[in-house]
Image 1 (cartoon, one colour):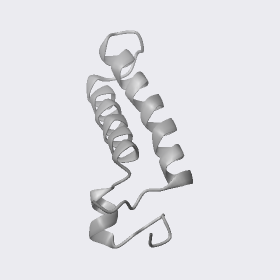
Image 2 (cartoon, helix red, strand yellow):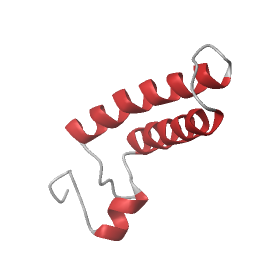
Image 3 (spheres, one colour):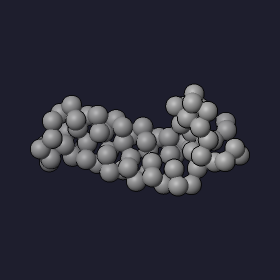
Image 4 (tube, helix red, strand yellow):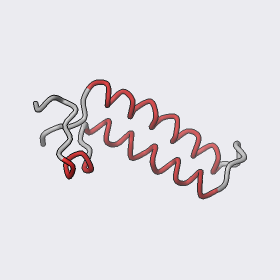
Length: 72
């Protein structure tokens, strides 16, 4: 499996993923006063970002032909 998410892109995805997942989970738990829909979307987007950063593969990048690894 060829990767298409590298270095800086991966770190940004990890950071944003953690923040969004924590905010979404906290909001769903009632710790933050954010709507349920917003919380659920934040949680899902955060988990997707964490997944793509971990796997170093973004399906959308594959479809669009984007490779932040410089064409490894």
